[in-house]
Every structure is written in C-alpha cells, then in structure tokens.
Amino acid sequence: MSARRWPAWVASGGIAATLALSFAASAQMRPGQPQVLSPAAAPTQQENTPWAALRGRLGSHNRVMLFWESTLDDSVSTRYRDVQTLDRQVHGNAAQVDGVIDSAAGPLGVAVAGGNAHLHQRSESFVEGEGPAHARLSADARAMQSVFMAQLRQGGVRFIDRALATRLAGGTVEGERPNVHAIETRALTGHADYLMEVTSSADADARSGRRFHVSLRSVSDGETVVDFDTSADTGSPATMAYVATANGFERGTPTPASEADTARVLATETGRRMADAMVRR
Image (cartoon, rainbow, N blue to C red):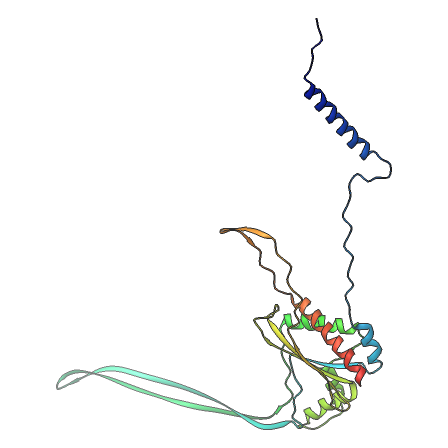
C-alpha cells in the first residue's frame, strides 16, 4: 500500500503553525520575563493643606471664638422691660326650672333660670431682657460645625466656647438687670484673640446647595483679617457609569456633596486665607 501524499499548501501551513507555536512558547519561557504585565499604579497626589503654615503664623495668638450661623450683636447695652401677666378665671353655677301653668289661653310652658358667678384674678410681674441672640442649630449643622472645627485644629486653632466664656465673665456680676452685651464683650476680650463668623444661605448652583460667608476679626483692635464668600464646592463630580432605566441606558446622576465634605473644603479654604492674611499682620 502506497503512502498518502498531502497537498503542499497543507504541509507548509502546518509547518508555519508549528513554528509560530514554538516561537510563542519559547518567548514565554525566556528567563526573567513576567507572564502578565500589570499597569503601573497611578501616583498618589498629596493634598496641599495650609495647616503647617497656619500653625507657624498663628503662634500663641490662636484662640478663636466661633459664631456658627450667627453674628455678633452690635448693641452695647441690654434692654429690659417690665412685663405683667393677668390670669382671670370665672367660676359659676346655674339652675333652670321648667314647668307648665294653666292660663285663660290654655296650658303655658315657663322656664326660670338663675345662677351666680365668681371671678378669680391673679397678676404676675417679671423683668424680661433682650440679650444677644444664639442660633439654634439642627443636627446636620452641628455635625458640619464639628468637622469644620476639627480641620482647623490641625492648623493650631484653639476654639473657645461662647456660652462658657460668657458665663465665666459674668460669674461675679450681680443685680436684676445686668448688661449681658457687656459681659459677652468681656468674654471675648478676656478669652479669645479672634472672632470668627460663619453664615450660609441657599444657593441652587452649588453642589452642597449652600453658599457660605466667613469673616475673621481681631478682638484686640477690631480689624477684619479675613472676609470672603465661597460655595465650598468639592470639585467636579466624577463621570458616572451608564445604568439601565426604563428609557434605556442613561448616565447615572452624581450624588450631592455631603455635609462633611463641604465642611472640610470650607475649613481648608478658610485656613489657607488665614495663613495668607497672617503674613501681612
């Protein structure tokens, strides 16, 4: 039986395929060559924070009394008024008698009502003062304030509690009508180097939905050291992936900035402006 002969193109193709596989195998087996090349890791970018510069420039004059969503009342004296309340109570009882009498025109119904009343009156007098206003913060506002303060503490800022400093300053004051505004001023001058006011208003264009105004004033001479408006935006939102919806695949909606992120951005911008302003003082 004679040997079967394959066409020349089949033989040449088989040889070429064998050579290709042998070359690939030899390339993978070369010493010192990794089998899979991993992409290089992206370098980590360090955030440029102002805390070191702020610590050095504040020095020992680092006591700050923070008014969050509040401002310093410009009144120099506390106004008082005498208030009198009047409480009146009326107590009474009544009796009613119904009956029927005969008359020339026929039976006639009659009703006789009677009673007595007693008036009780009580008055009270007290003194009401118009002291400095204190904002009532929501839970979200308090949480945002805490993050803001924690960030600035990294720059050496020491926050002085407004209520406690006022109590300490007014501990020896006596009398029915103390000047609460003067006591608060004494608390400022005796316990703080700077007064910081942070207020906000609604802003639909900002990612957080708020726009902030920050001012920093020197307690010793009243100089405005820092004063600026900012939306405290956390940067452009990342490109969202496509998600399946009833209308097909649509790009996802970026989530709004959290209160903590906004507070960190606001604190960083405040610290940077404070550090720059301290150079000029």
